[in-house]
Length: 300
Ligand code: GUN
Image 1: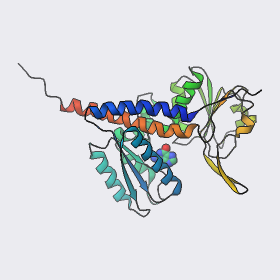
Image 2 (image 1 turned 60 degrees about the vertical axis):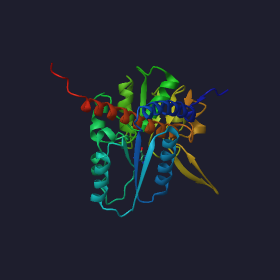
Image 3 (image 1 turned 180 degrees about the vertical axis):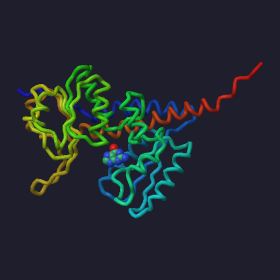
Image 4 (image 1 turned 90 degrees about the vertical axis):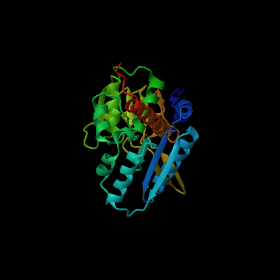
């Protein structure tokens, strides 16, 4: 009998969002409404869906959202000018620049233009560096969501061997840093790794973030491993199109002790942690402004 646990990302995300909602309401009662600015350049259909979902979720939490839809051929300078304006606006607490950007805009330049304190994606080098040094900063949403699922499922991660498959800046690298911070032994596998499946078979925890449909099957997994599948790949089978992960779910299920489904696993956690980061950014900015505006101690 297969007794593997299905890790319910929808339920976990609902718990995170409920807490965010409570904390947002408390800020609003103090006269500050957290606000997220979402910037979308061009008309990529997947990005449009992601942005719509982010805005809907923000509204549900009581977070104000501002949406900026820019033409595909907008100049880099114009985009940078908008980012500068949002940086300077004290009523905007978080800025999300939806990726990918059109080829004529340099992604790094645009991401680096965002104020690190408003960088709710955690992509600015100041936040990336802070994460690698173990400082408390705004951390990328998908890896944060994966860590929450792991803590909920495994409890203490200390001493576990975690294998991260994929080395992207958005998921693989920050994931490895967070696992290290949680005292795991971390191996990162990528397209040039030798004996990848054999290395992965040593892991207590496997994070699949390669973007290749159903690449990771049972031969990559140790019996009893906990598997977090970050992949969201659309495939067509005959007439039908559906979403599958980077893990071959049917092959993995009899082997693992717990696994995230796709959809309904990591996906909902990414948006939940975007809301949480917006709240954290707003709380930190409120603190900074309160300090800078405090009257000077009087000299008697
Ligand atoms: N495009 C795909 N994933 C992401 C993400 O996490 N953040 C942003 N800004 N763009 C994305």
